[in-house]
Image (cartoon, rainbow, N blue to C red; front, side, top):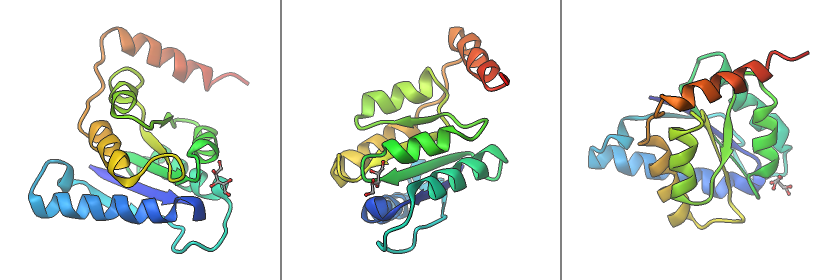
Length: 155
Ligand code: RB5
């Protein structure tokens, strides 16, 4: 599983925590640890603009360069909106593991959005674990997913 991660200055510290979490899971030999995580920036906490980073991850996922994305800003809201502007992206802002599981199971979300100023690193890691260990359930959700994709074709 290839994952692109990015965030603005408001998400920089949490981005580093999440990268460290994947590295720890790799050492532990867990399934989550098999993910290859690529950092697309920002590479410091100097103020930058969240749309640039939401779009960067969204485009990379939409092009098929990565299976999934993680986008992080202060609230997770702006960067989720930015990622969702890219056709093919289904970014879900999740601040609890239940929402993260549902985002994958029901919505086949391919980008997870997080807000560093909303959740602590412990909860964020639990959200990441839930998101990346839950498959899309298919079934009745496939029809609804097709309707989401059809909306992208309007105009
Ligand atoms: C930056 O101050 C902040 O607006 C940004 O990180 C994010 O929360 C926007 O939605």
